[in-house]
Amino acid sequence: MKLSYVTDSLGHLPFEAMLDRVAQMGVTAVEMTTGGWSGAPHLRMNELLESAEKRNAFLGALESRGIELCALNVSGNPLDPGALGAKHRDDTERTLELAEALGVKKIIMMSGLPPACAEDRVPNWISYTVSWPPVLKDYLNYQWNDVAIPYWHKLVDKAGGCGVEKIALENFSSMLVYNPETLFRLRDAVGPLVGLNLDPSHLFWMGADPIAAARALGPAIHHVHGKDSRLERGLVDINGVMETKEVTDTVARAWNYVAVGCGHDLQWWREFFSVVRMLGYDGHVSLEMEDLTMSVDAGIRTSIDALKQTISQ
Image 1 (cartoon, rainbow, N blue to C red):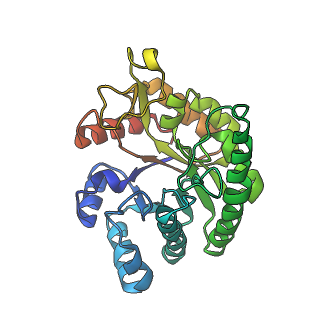
Image 2 (image 1 turned 45 degrees about the vertical axis):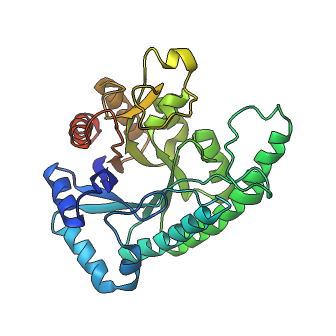
């Protein structure tokens, strides 16, 4: 496996300065955002789609530093019923076209989350039993069968036509696909081009074991994010993990995203990567640095050091 870097946490730096920083850290691949939730600080998608000259300059800046573009990331909610969803669907379509133009074979994104019925105006994450109220079962069927699966059939067809070989869905909360079981529901419906971007940080706080999840996924592991989270002692014990606090309120939250090694020790990470490699995944592991308990620089240094010590080469 190879270490990669999701570049948004260096969004304050211009494109080439960001690449210089990545190279200085000894990282040889980047995963770059194109839109969706991200403002795509290092990539102007319209310019790259319209100009071969700008694409060549973009790729040349990477190549001159020995950095590979391992994936494009367009994480967002393409199933939102409003203007946001329309924008994210457009970002996704153009990201597939850009992948073809740049020769990128892997797309990182999220499954999206629809509303619970055609009359709803907002997405609805149904994450409780559908036994009560019983209408939740109808809502969940609507989300899957009327919205998500038809959309994903069309998107997979377009992705294949653009030469994309893998779409890796992050197992993120408030999405229809948030764990292996929901990934397989979509994958069984639309085909193996869709797999999981296995991100341990989300599984930790949901109460799952990412190592067991990796064993269940096997060849459905399409990508891995190197990202940790920590259940906060004395807080999670009182109210559990479900909360509505701002992500910046780190002191009061029951759990936080943290630098790699600050939630789970390096022995855990060595076992995780060993199992993932044993199961056949030998692709990139992208550091997504979202630790708000320390400075960006400290979080990057801590995580890079931990990942270099634990990734199975």
